[in-house]
Length: 318
Image (cartoon, rainbow, N blue to C red; front, side):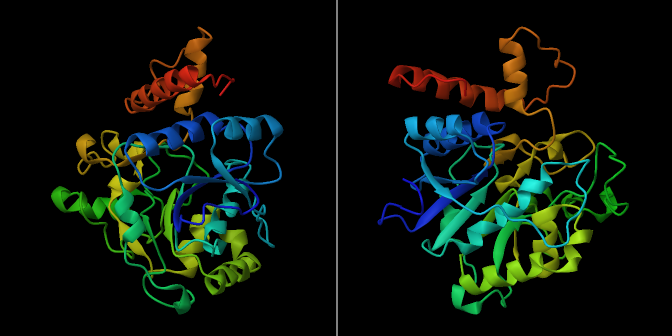
């Protein structure tokens, strides 16, 4: 399915954005994981003009729904030389425009769903007619602002004492079920998972934000815009729905992390687990000292996906 065509019986969907094939192995494993955990809802791939023919063929051969979306950029650009991925991230705001659906849950392609989280499709949010003026405009988990790799180009206020997750260290049981207040820490949502009731008026507000000169100060593209425009007016989900792999690291937020509770893991930063997978297949793997424990979880899902695809006769480089 393409060009906005969809199953008329589907009013709620997962979506993920793709602009090139670098993340395609991740996307395919994400889609497989959603099916494996028994989600009732399909994944719709949002692609831009830059997505190439071999990527389309990979999606089509697997029967994955896709939909073209515009490549969004702000009027006042910001230099993302240190994090070039952010140039593509503005287009992750397009789910707010998909008014043919009642509910959209946007996922990054570098995620794997470990447990069913269909409950996000029924989470209470402001109805579209509130036009982004309410206090539950969308839902997301907090961004971690600890900067554990001490990247020098990150904002100076991105330190553990300003992180919303740090406020939950003394109540880890609660952290499994509830997010810190939307204004805790710096009050910034992570854009990797967004629960949205699409609405034309809300999307128009976002486009106005993209046209504002403020975007030149947004260090983290889409999530900076959402955090600024809707400060304190979004629903903060617990970390388990967008479990950044770095939260598990010793001394970051291992105080609240529990493997058995994670529903969706987010493989932020490099290397991605599929890069390490490719290196091992080539016999050039030298990542033993860098490999994150959680990458093995992705590898397990990926192996199952490839085995299943082989049985169906689907074979390509992804």
